[in-house]
Length: 168
Image (tube, rainbow, N blue to C red):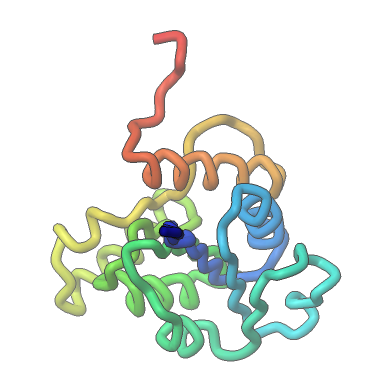
C-alpha cells in the first residue's frame, strides 16, 4: 500500500512588479511559495528580473486579479505604482477567501483608501482583516528590507503566530 500526501502549495499573488514586488517574489520563491506577479507594464515584467517559475501576468492588474484562483492558501500583496491601482486591487479581493491580504502604503494612504471603500458600502469588519500598512516594523527602507518585513508578516499569518521578539 502506497499513500502519497499532497500538501497544498501556498500561492502568493503580488499586484505590482516594481522593485518591492521583485524583492518579495525572490524571497517568496526561496520560501517555497508559488508566485504570480501582476503588472500592466511590460518592461517591469522582464523575466530576467524574477526567479524561474514565477508566473508573470501582463495586463490590467485588477482584471488579472479577478481572474486568479483565490482560496484559503492564497496570500495577496498589493504594491502597485499608484494609489488608485492599490485601492481598485484591494476592492477586487477584500471579500475573497484569501488567507492574507496586505497593502503597501503610508497610514494616510491606507486611511483614505479605507474611507473610500466604506463610502462604497464595505464594512469595517471586512476591512479589518487587511494588513495595511503592510509588514512588520523591523526598520529599513530598501526594497529587500521591505520584502523581508512583508514576508515575515506573511509567515506569521501562515503559521498562526503573533510576531514578537523571541527573547520574551
